[in-house]
Amino acid sequence: MSDTSYTIDPPLMDLPIETAQSGYYHGFSRIVTITSKLIVTILILWAVLFPVQAGATLDFAKTTIISQFSGWYIYLVAFLSVVAFALAIIPNSGKLRLGQADERAEFSRFSWFAMLFGAGIGIGMLTYSTGEPLSHFANNPDIIRGIIEPVSAEAVRPAYIYTFLHWGVAAWATYALVGLAIGYVAYRRDLPLTIRSSLAPLFGKAMSGPAGHIVDIVAVVATILGVAVTMSLGVEQFVAGLYRLGFGDWLVTSGGPDSVPAASVPAIIIALIFLVGASTISALSGVGRGIKWLSNLNMALSFLLIAIFVIAGSGLLSFELLLTGIYDYIVNLPILAISVWSADGTPVGDALAQWQLDWSVFYWAWWIAFAPFVGMFIARISRGRTVREYVFGVVLVPSLMCFTWFALVGGTAIDLELSGAAQGSILGAGISDQLYATLAVLFDPAIAALLSGLVVILLMTYLITSADSAILIINTINGAGEDEDEIERRHHILFWGAALALVVGSMLILGGIDAISTAMIIGALPFSFVVALMAISIVKAIIFDLIRKHQDVPTTAHAIDSVAEQPAS
Image 1 (tube, rainbow, N blue to C red):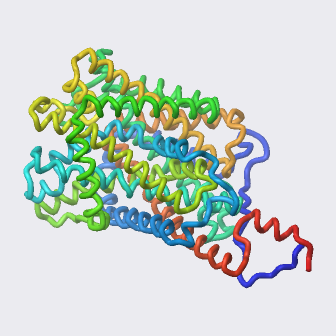
Image 2 (cartoon, one colour):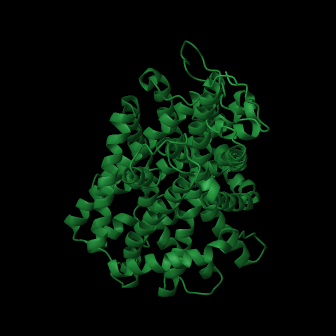
């Protein structure tokens, strides 16, 4: 053994987490797993047994609690974006590697980018690729202020500023920061690949105990609610597609807002049984046979759909919107990223505050709730990359893919409305039906039906993949970072599959997308404080590692082992 002493200690390289050694919870942290299950079960029972009280509580929360924390969400996401880019741009920190000093990336850049593209954006992009640009085309802050007219040529550019604001740096910097905080300590310091490990640079071995359990529990609940929002959007659009394909009027009800047809209760139940059942079977089959095969299918179908819009859509306008949208987004981002609109009793002020709650705050909370799932997935596929390559790759490439998708699909829908070809049929459709409505205007009925079938299949694969991945990530958190022997954990996979279906179903039936969105924003709030601490923790970890490097103190588990094996001098 070496008797080397240092002026600064090497980083913590061991974070033991107690797990059950036998029985039903073998390999799991009993405290984290049981508590998470209890919280989710109570949420489901509350929505099912006391729907009136639950609905009233969510409505109250939407008008009070959420509005009080809107500024927190806005400033937090701006802070996360600045931290992520700062760590990448600063030369010394950007060169650090997520792994040992001589370690190289596990996946090629092409494979890595392909997996990033499918990490949590597929369902949302299918729903919002037409829905969001069209919504902002009809109403956005510039329209609320009276600067421009709604549904006019002048409303197009602002519509894309706000669409890109929500699907650009803010989303992906949040994911990148969470993944970086987890991956950095997992691959350099051999700590468990779980949420609590990311806070070890701040709190040390305290993360082995109750504080660490709380962090992981909060992450599991946030993940369930974040994925539930995504599943809800997907289920609504899946049912709308089946209705378009002629599977029967029983699929929809006219009881939705503004008489826009919404998925019926029987349709929601049957869709969830089928989709979550398939995802649970996929999860039981393991990552290699289930998620990998579906991810490849997702990519192929996604590129096929986008190629169709390149060829048959409004290509010239879409290309113009992509370029002008990116320019306008970059110019306006510094101001929009930190703008908080509060209700001031005036019609304009109240409308601006409500618009921000309905869109920006909803998105920021959604990205934060989705961050444990997507962040851990990105961390798992990014071992061996430098901090700079990781941040720029995770933030810029998926953002550009989102921008391209929204410009092509949403731009075509807007062009069809501006030209009069759609005659309001796309704008008048519900958000879950607008993509199908665009296809119906763009193509002959037979081709439109064929392409609507393609969208339904793509939605199905994205839904199954998202639920499948979420179940496995939850088991990884509950299992103290271990993801081995998933087949032996089949009872827990079945529980979380059923829980996810029941959360989505109960909330959709209780109050539709609004109810589950409100529940998600509240559920994401505790984890938002964890994310803030993760940002501080990764900054501290990197700064101290740079100091250690300057003083020749080992910063990785491999380097410490090498020093320990040297003979004493």
